[in-house]
Length: 135
Image 1 (cartoon, one colour):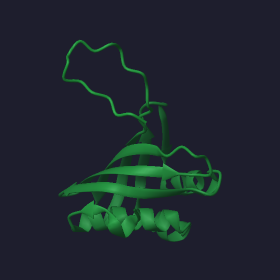
Image 2 (cartoon, one colour):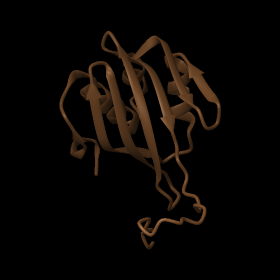
Image 3 (cartoon, one colour):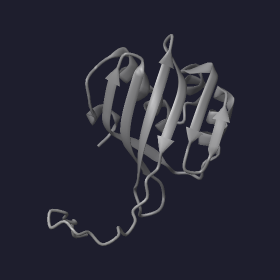
Image 4 (cartoon, helix red, strand yellow):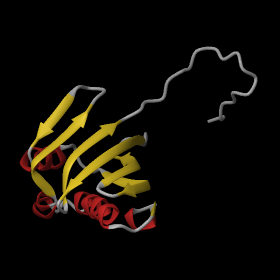
């Protein structure tokens, strides 16, 4: 599933986030930077990492080991807020899932907060209603 195939109601905010990932996947760094507000901030709460400024995010993406791409799976927009579910693909066999929240301001992305959940073994469940998919 590529950027164009994502289930997302069309809105200016959703279109901007889809365009952001199309530029990132195409490594079009100058165009990507123009979509970010001057006071842009990127955050990953699990690792307590953050990046401030468009140049920082562009450098982070440009220096990530290649090849990589992001496929948007779901995109929900309300006003200047966008939530996405995406898959991250690189040269490893594992596909990582990310949930991201985007805050827009005057036609630019001002903040991105991403959560990268990792699979884990849950504790024993006592409810007979809980099922697990077989891999």
